[in-house]
Length: 386
Ligand SMILES: NC(=O)c1ccc[n+]([C@@H]2O[C@H](COP(=O)([O-])OP(=O)(O)OC[C@H]3O[C@@H](n4cnc5c(N)ncnc54)[C@H](O)[C@@H]3O)[C@@H](O)[C@H]2O)c1
Image 1 (spheres, helix red, strand yellow):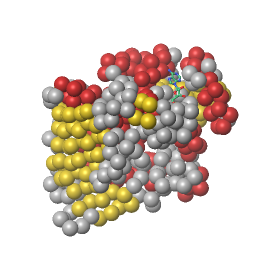
Image 2: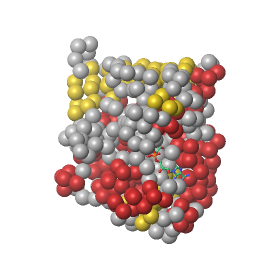
Image 3: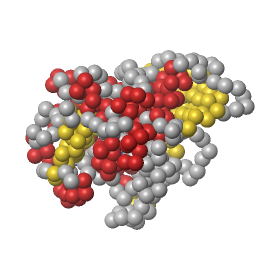
Image 4: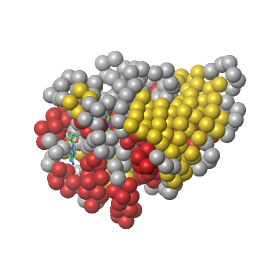
């Protein structure tokens, strides 16, 4: 049975979810709502769904899963309200911005027998899944160390309403950390301890993105540069460098160095990319993923350069509900990511190592056949619609 999706939060990211919905067999958007009714009306008009008030959406018998695409500070309240209303939830990252809120979501869902899924579903993309196979099949050997870098000049240059990125709940670790830490946990298992250091790089940011806020001056309330050492339960050590105070750099997104090879993992913000492996000191062997449906660039729509199949994790959750199996982008994994991110922030603030208590299983691998089976039609037939 197709799961009917009610969208809450009709901002920037809702567009790609609504665009991609037609790719997947097991989901259909029926309704949308937003604290700004005009935003809901605009999305409803474009995508042929019904704009509702928030109360009506939570109460709607036409909604099985609430897709929570609100701002991070609102994630917990929206997810809790959806669960209280008897709906499954799939939320944009992070699961919540406070650990106790994340725990409350997990516990309420368990008590009610409802599912909670969470972005980033890029861990299910062909790029990260290809890298994972090279770890799981022993090509890399035992992962020993690595580096992950989240570095850019920040968000005020492209997002029309970027203030939330610099308020509590924002910053590069809580905003982009889910991609990188989520990918690392999916590849290497849970984190046991973190040590971090951070600072606010610039006292003031000026919005240059076109729109109503151009020229707005924002004073960051959270560190915009944080460097952390992650000690995984397995023993692997990863240095995570996260900053929105960087003009340009030469680092790759993630490198993992194992006993028998070094691995370059493509950008975990997207679904495709090129995986590189070095089995000696001289050569990188490249495995591009564009031959796979989920590796074909489809974003931005006008001039595609990235594979952006957001919604894949939601489609996997919908299929899992029908099949009665666990879903992959799940709340245990999302809660652990939140725990690690908050531990990094606490460590930077206290200038001490912080032990991470939570654990999660690595989400199950998603084979090419399993990923293709989530599509509405065979991959070749879908290519023209991607
Ligand atoms: N913009 C991106 O490229 C991007 C990419 C990946 C993930 N995300 C994540 O997606 C989420 C949304 O980001 P965005 O960029 O679309 O933000 P946005 O500000 O463009 O949109 C958020 C929308 O949520 C609405 N909203 C806020 N609180 C609400 C509430 N309590 N109830 C109902 N509606 C509420 C706002 O009115 C707004 O329309 C964030 O969690 C962000 O981390 C964004």
